[in-house]
Image 1 (cartoon, rainbow, N blue to C red):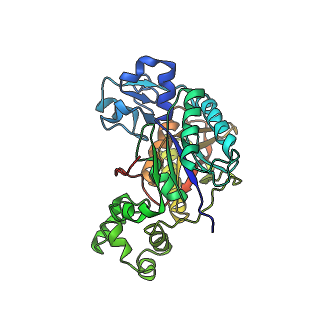
Image 2: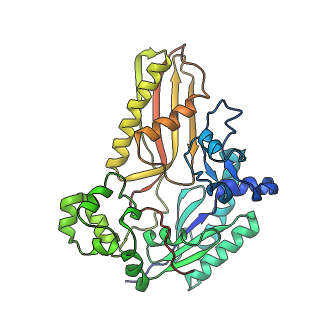
Image 3: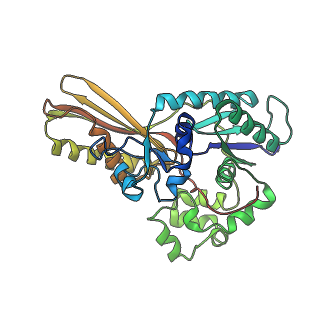
Length: 360
């Protein structure tokens, strides 16, 4: 069977980098992509932050007010997702010059299958370098590229040499790399699962390799099968370039209508809990949360917030984000007849981003 050549391209601090293009003076300042909480009454959520701001502990999905507390000198900018999409379109045009097998996960992230690419370039590393160079030339933005023989490892490779790096994980290095990986870094092994892993004395990839497939399934259900495969560097998922963008959401219609803030927030919390359960059952996570609110007169608002990292699958997190969107909507005295929360920009819940060094 022909070995696949998979590339994962991840833009470096995408939204923040665009803001720095618009105002180059921001490059040496801690920049937070969000509305300034001093102008919104403390409302707002961080979409991303540049590397200067991340040094203060500021990260995606944090409240803007918390970001301000961590770094009082932070600069807040937000040009809007419609504007950011224009840059994303240019980046995807570059991808399509090499292959039509492009699986986009967000405005700033995509998998490419370049096994049989349009330019007949044999070495996928050369493809990755050309893509980086063209993106930089056309947008003045940098990207990080991971190259491997499957999607899972290509994704992990792109995280190693940020920003503006290119990293290769080939078959001879994969097992060594995975053996050294702490179990907490395996995507899907969340806060609730880590204690169980430690109780079973599974502390890293090497420990995981010692377990049989049946025993992992016994303890972790279907996810045990995924763990068994990924610990061995196995991931047969294709680059799904024809797939439709999917989403997971729940909405409820109310009669009588909700007319107080307490009623709306209580209902929103229940919907958030339902979404968490569904997302967990589908083994997914997403980068975008969409809030839908329909009033008694059928006026409907659909607003979203997107991040450069996946949102934690937590009802509290969903409720927090939805509540902050809610702050910008009209009051509820006239009555709310429908509420909904949807998670989009989905990906399979498999492994976490990694902080280990490899080679590049």
